Amino acid sequence: MNKLGILAAIMLLVLALVPAVIAVNKVCEPSDVVIVIDKSGSMTTVDNGETETRMSLAKDAAKYFVDLLAEDDKSGLVSFASTAHLDQELTDNGSLVKAAIDALVPSGLTCISCGIEKAQVELEDNGRENVTPVIVMLTDGYPTMDTDELALAAAGYSKGEGTTIFTIGIGEADQDLLEEIASDPTKFSFGAPSDLDAIYEDIAGALCQPDDEVPEFGTVAAGVALVGAIAGFFVLRRRRD
Image 1 (tube, rainbow, N blue to C red):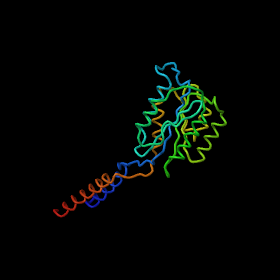
Image 2: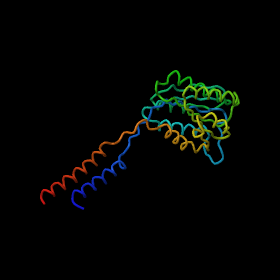
Image 3: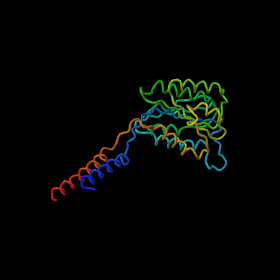
Image 4: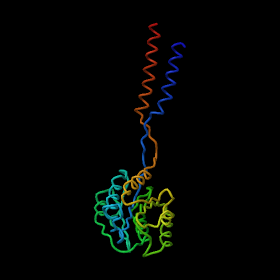
C-alpha cells in the first residue's frame, strides 16, 4: 500500500472511532416536583429489621431526593393523613423543602386522594409553563378516610392534566392501587423503608431524560486535529522523499 493509501486508511479509522468517544451532555428537561408524604399514625411503626420508624426513614430519604433533583427543577411538599396540607410551595430552594420535611409529625388516618388533589392544585397554581409537572407520592397504607375510587379519580384528573405520577409503597401499602395510581407500572415502587434511598435515586434518574444531546466539541476537535496531524506528517514525508 502506498503512503496515500495508508493515510486514507488511518483517516477512516480515526473518523470511525471519534463518534464512539464523543461525550454527550444530557440536558434534562426541568420538572416541577411535588413530594407527597403520608404522615398518618402508622408511619410511627418500626418494621422488623429496622431500627427507626417509617417516618424517620421516609424523611431522610425524601431529603436525599431533594438533593438529587436537577438544578433547574423546583420542588414542594404536601403531606397527608386524615386531610392534606401544603407544607412548602414549589421553590428552587431545597433547604426550605428539607426543613418542611423535618417538621412533619405523624398522626391520623389516610386520605390518599387528599394528598394527590392538594399536590395537583399546587402544580396548577405555582407550576411553570412548559415544565413537566410531577407528583412523587409515598404511603404505607391504603385509603381509610377516602376510597380507592376517590384516589383513582384524583390520580386520573392529575394524569389527564399532564402530570406524571410516581408512587412508592412501604409497610401495608395497597400495591395494586398504587400501581394503578402511577402514570405507568414502571413508576410504581414498593420496598422496605430502608430501601427508600435507592427508590428515590431511581425516580431522580427517570426524571432526568435527555432533552437534547450536545456533543463535546472538544473531543471532536481532538479527533480532527489528529487526522490533520497525521496528514501533515505524510505530506512532509512525501516532500522529503
